[in-house]
Image 1 (cartoon, rainbow, N blue to C red):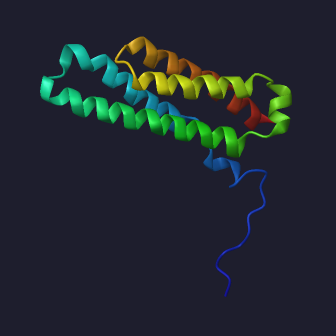
Image 2: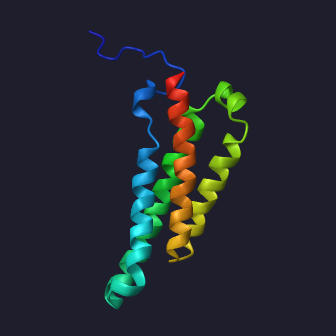
Length: 126
């Protein structure tokens, strides 16, 4: 009995499993930590907050890379020629968020993910 059947898709798995919301959720956590860091956190919580923020930044990068490398294909790049740059800039911004507690950096990351998300959902309509 063969329990594993091959799946034929243009990506690793059927496209229903890909969603930029995963990156956005992690980026929202990054921004929330930045928002709370100075006014609300006690000194003993600040180190933990930084560790969690850095972990979430890595998860943002991971989820963006999965979309970039596994979901998007050459046909998408033809229609959206700046797609590679958008992903590169967003993953770089996630790295920048590791270096700061400035909420504007977190907001910039969220805005970049939103741009990628808009393109992603446009490709799903096709």
